[in-house]
Length: 283
Image (cartoon, rainbow, N blue to C red):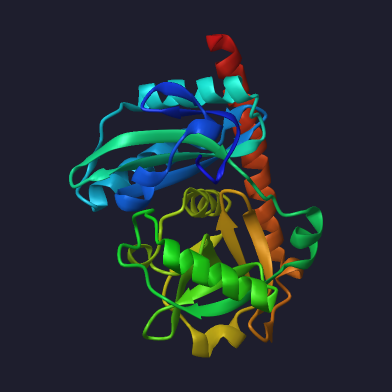
């Protein structure tokens, strides 16, 4: 069975299958890209943006996905209804060889959403030396994921911030990262990171709300100069950082970070409200 799949059903190449009877042998042996979408009240959050990134990931490894957005959206909504998976993360996994990602899986995965206390107090992060070969493509690296998870467990941390060979922070192991100095947001350059949907949304909303953003290298030697930092991701939204290794940061008290968190939460509520009306009208 697919070890990470939860609930009763998944969709494999447009066929409804039992989670318990599905195999992952093909997944571990072939090229693959994936996308994780958060479902809130039955609404796939920022769906078009996720599908656009899925196709971009395919292009970056010279592959294509033999399914239209309309077909994928139909299967996503079908799987939500089948499983009654109204508040959980769904994964779209595309696997294959060479230019053809011919096998497409959709299934729900175990999801962790940070409790209120983490947003109020901030999270502990660690530094981890590693670089992605194709930063903009969301691809699997099982060995790296396992190594980072072990380090996080040993050091009782929530996330690892990846550090390149020039001692610059690029991104989190499963998130993007922002820093604050004064009233300006700083984030690593787009060509060096996975362009997360939440990252893009935070940048868009910040600009609309007159918060300046600068893309620049974040050197380890400059960390103590920043007033705050936060990670962004599908499950976390905007989540303040209280420690980077032994460096303490009062991110949870930073006015800019608090403002960004509020703006993002309001946008989610508006998106869900507008999308639910559309979805209900389609039924």
